[in-house]
Image 1 (cartoon, rainbow, N blue to C red):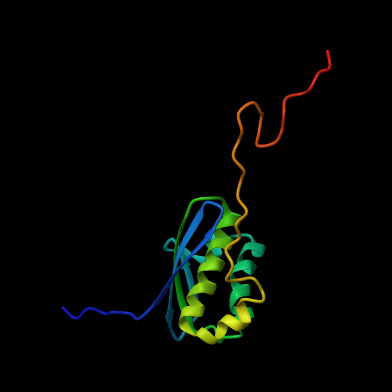
Image 2 (image 1 turned 180 degrees about the vertical axis):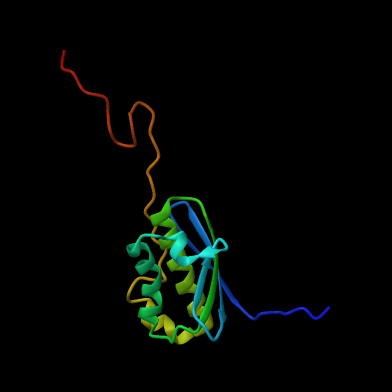
Length: 134
């Protein structure tokens, strides 16, 4: 009954309605698993993968981490942003000195933009029915 307990740093990243629970573990080889799938399979678009890896580029750390992510809600773009936010927060927990590098680039700030609610009497949040003089 020898259980392997990995020491990890956990963090939560959010964007719109997406929530990403991120765990980073120091490892000899760099790997990212999202919802138990490979990083390249979960985000087939190169731009979304770049959003996530840009956090490691900004931190200027050697990529010696095993990153496991559970993400749900929202669309693919907001999920990628939520994962990046979670990784940035986890890296800050790993090394507090990284805050000085990540904060000016806006990687620790949660993007508050979300869809505005629909108001009664309107067709959408701000779109009104066509106005007629007569």
